[in-house]
Length: 314
Image 1 (cartoon, rainbow, N blue to C red):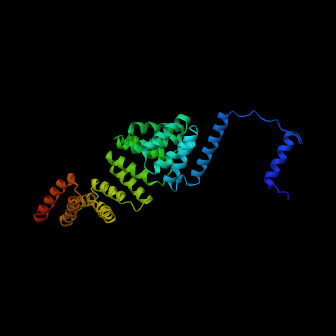
Image 2: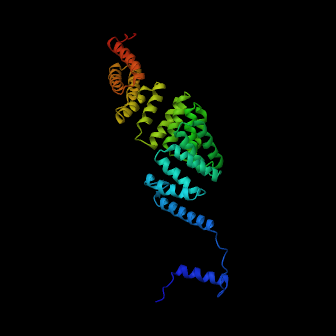
Image 3: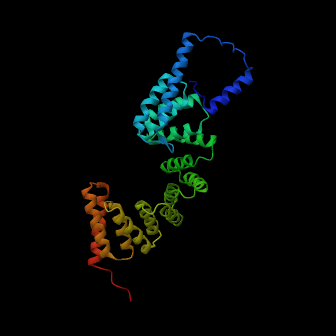
């Protein structure tokens, strides 16, 4: 019995016949040398391994990166010119926090394709996580030069600027990122930190408010906004935020310390004492020695003020 070709295959067959000339016998191409045949087979196998790995990728991430790394390694070994094998192995390694290995893969990607924005972004991120800040900054800047629409590149470069104390440059990057993607928590939060570092407490409070809007479950955003209000001497709102942060993260003595300071700002030394003593107990339990001495001094100060309040001036 004759096996029928699928419709698509039949159409392609007819197309070839009419293009080449019906009934013509095609001329054989030049025979491959054994070396060429071997290379062709390796390239084909490498493409197969790459395809196998990519079946596990969804929304730009591997579901099982440690498993995807194996066929990607085989693909890279079989075809050292296969850019995607190195690129996606770097992605798999980044997911596993194998930063040095990812950096090496991205070195190869950039060698093969020196104008790929994604490769510079990923290498910059891998270097950032290894505290190679200067090299990371160069990569992220190059990424933005090649593609100035990559929001993540502005965010990560802004983070590096903040870490280097270049807060105005950080604000510029985060402002750019917010303009392109207004709903991101990290852009508002990091810009708030930069504004706070520059003494712009009101602007910082606004940024942290936007960060809370993007992620209402973030205790650190509440704590930072409370800190900004504390520095603005808006003690009531500082207390609300710092109390919320302490409730969300009861193991953070720094939140309780700031809460104690906010209570003290309102001269509510009874509440300040409760907060600072809880903070002191947590700091001792967690062996946070650099804060224990400060908290002990605050405890002594608030105790004295509670026991001997200053007389009211008529």
